[in-house]
Image 1 (cartoon, one colour):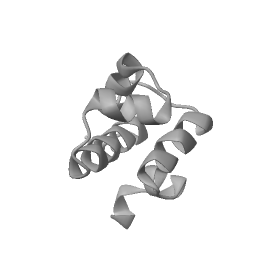
Image 2: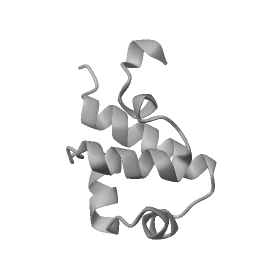
Image 3: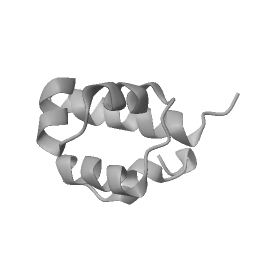
Image 4: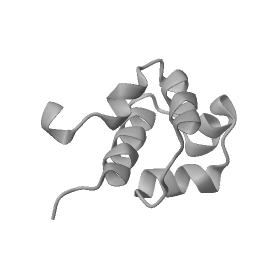
Length: 74
């Protein structure tokens, strides 16, 4: 079964956060996001808004497009 966009975003967010050795709590404080919502994003069950994706991207200093690009571009 193909990975959904929500799952792909969640996988990328979790991977970036772990690469930077950030706890969920620390990252949430950095970007002003609730921890339960970040949990849902990382699990691929939340459908984050563009505004939230921008917050996440700014926290990692990456373009928003990295989070949403197709898996075929990885």
